[in-house]
Length: 176
Image 1 (cartoon, rainbow, N blue to C red):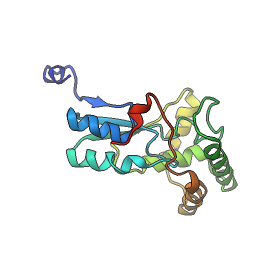
Image 2: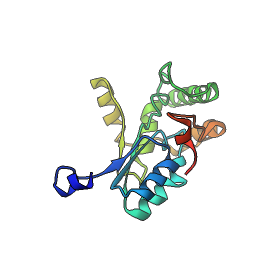
Image 3: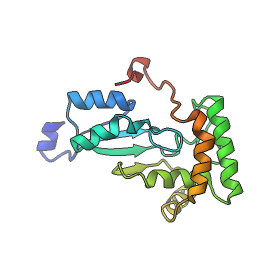
């Protein structure tokens, strides 16, 4: 990859697809320009900040935050059937969605804005499948949720905050 970069065919070399600690171990062994991490900085989980964010800052590595809606669970619909979140997480997110509605707000808007405001990522990537979702997500750029709503959301999510589950091969989920 570095050879292709030297030839001008590749601008940046990056890694993705592993939990934060494992990404740090890889980047310590093989220098990279960028690291994309998903489902590790949003309203439910922020464990990317424990090891990966400080490492990336120290090394000048671009950090990309993906899946601010935590694979769709931080939406009014509460995520797809296949979502691996345990019942306690699903229940807490339903309560947060109800709270947002009671304030005339939308959970996905608040979740997106929370990630857009994150100063340690070069960008936040969110998947969209319809033009309506594109428009809705673009509208989340403007404004922000009232601080009191975020405080209430954090209180509801506190019992399940930073709860993660095995993704991919179990041995790749071990801490860095």
